Image: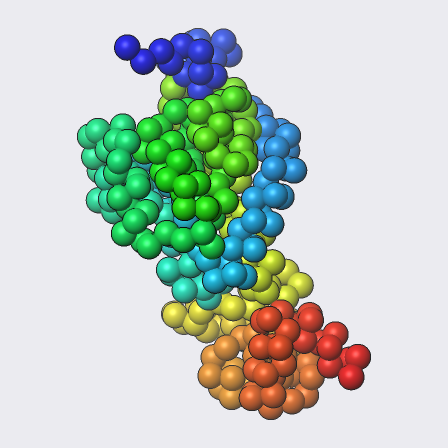
Length: 302
């Protein structure tokens, strides 16, 4: 029988032994106090997160992908982070991928036994055409999920850089990965319910990795989302607002620049800041590897 008793994520929290007797306010206050431990736990592993950001940036720059692996809540968090990258950063959906044990249907309904498979993740990665350019990030709150462990093993055999994210120190997932990120927020309010603090920990780490790597490949100028896709009315206005904020232009000028740039915010900003045409701005951005600040520096030096 599997022994979970030594896992922090499965331990009982001494401060919530009367959870079933608490008032709604007491439950909310207790959970809020426990969530404060999440920020502290993530702070302890910032150097490891920084390494993961650097590796992910290098993979993207080399034409590789960020690939998340997970089961249950951990898998859903990976999928969530992946699907939010295209609308936020204008990146192709194939560049950040979330794999969940049991396939897409498992996002909504658990697929029994999928997380315990030792072969399923390798099959999923082979279907993706995994290469050594990719970075593979395995997520498992407990740190012992076979789907993730054996996926990381296969990724390592292909030559990928691998990262294991778990909420137990010295986890098997961490040992199988080249880099272990293991924040420890402590026992859950509801014993073993790792969708709580452990899930929040993982979400925070993924936020940092995806945002940091996208900034690293030029998807931001200052703190603005300059590759945002205009897929709805709100985002059309946001694109105009971003252009106005970055350049100090009027809305009419932003609309015209975006029109000339065929909706590409980054190009519109570069046009306005360098007083050049859309084609010239696109060329300058290409030479600067898509980074507005680099394009501006290069043009200033000239």
